[in-house]
Amino acid sequence: MNTAEKYLLFGNILKTFGTSGELIVKLGNQALSTINLKEPVFIIIDGLPVPFYFKVFDERPGNRALVILENIETEKLSKQLVGMQILLPHKKQIADKDFNLNHFAGFEATDATDGKIGTITEFLDFPHNPCFRIIHNDKEILVPINEDFIESIDEKSKTINFNLPSGLVDFYMNE
Image (cartoon, one colour):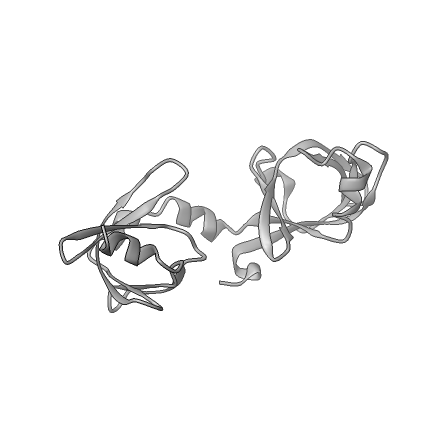
């Protein structure tokens, strides 16, 4: 899924304003009444979506806003964001968060390097590190649920293809 499918344009950062991290943002077509300004927005930095929260959001004429993002409170930091886009998670992404990951119990797990790993038995909702429990030859493997590790999901064949960090499967197999 590319960035355009995951995010909607909230606005473009036009310029800095002042010396305390203020930014002038040209707002996109999203109706502000439908947006929760207490939820994170994202800016793609070095190819990765980085979440930010609004510290200040002041709507201005001309479909613009004066904003201060948390942790961006100097002119030097705010200048680095000029020209970037502020993005919102696409509604489908928000709905996906509510998706019950136990749906994948029974799916076969394969890895790009190690081939067939085993069968997913359950979703484990560890704080800050959700995992799939996979059983392979009576051994338990815990695989972090990270979109960078998931190459594809085939609902028809009930298979999830991973590209796991080197040594992860071996670690569990050699216990």
